[in-house]
Image 1 (cartoon, one colour):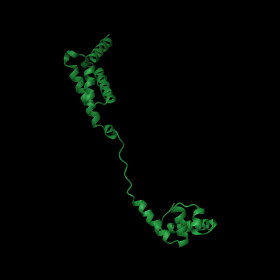
Image 2 (image 1 turned 90 degrees about the horizontal axis):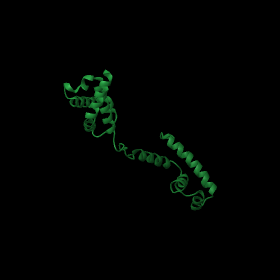
Image 3 (image 1 turned 120 degrees about the vertical axis):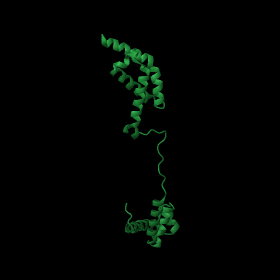
Image 4 (image 1 turned 90 degrees about the vertical axis):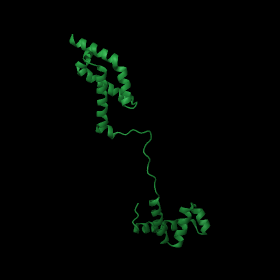
Length: 170
């Protein structure tokens, strides 16, 4: 019979104070509804575990509930779990590339190209840097397309070796 009386007191406590406790919990959590629900639930669970609170003749149950809710919120703010999670509307900004790496690579390639023969530089310049096809490069240089292919092959091999000498690897 005692359990039935405690259940009735708990229902009465909930009916009398749940709305005010919910409003207070929303303020404590800066409007975070999920966190406020957890706060109210934990507060009411502690009230259920402490039957003396259910007997409102000994004092104000609302004051006790608000004090417990505030202490639970403070404990949450102090805990390491609350510091590890950061919520934000936007992801953090990504660092902008400064172009240093690209400039260094450009200097290394230019230096390595300087070691090639004029014929090899000319073929690579037309085919790779200016985007000409083999047939267009051959016509422009006045040589056979097979010669453009051959020079391109040997020019790329020589360029690869020159870059490897400078520490550039794939």
